[in-house]
Length: 63
Image (cartoon, rainbow, N blue to C red; front, side, top):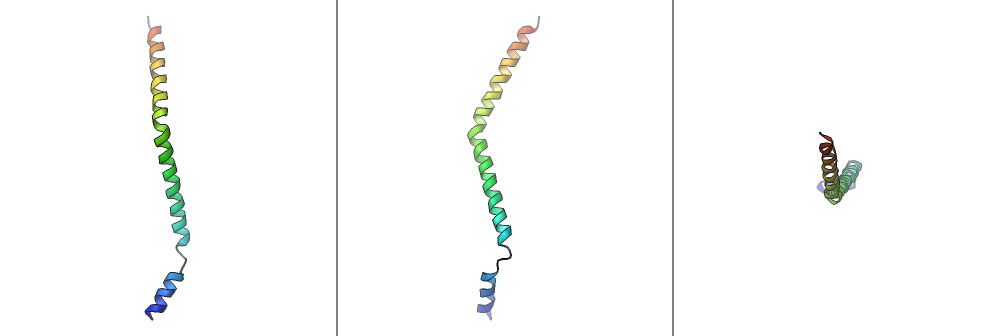
């Protein structure tokens, strides 16, 4: 009886789709985190430099 139960459990594929969707979601999250890690510093520097230039230009216009 236990052997039949374990055999049926191993052949059961009812939860396979949910696991596959979970793995795909995990891969997408890893790709997003990885891209933020690679591009984050360059993007931060871009905005910091742009902010400094705008502030310098605007403060120069103040009489």
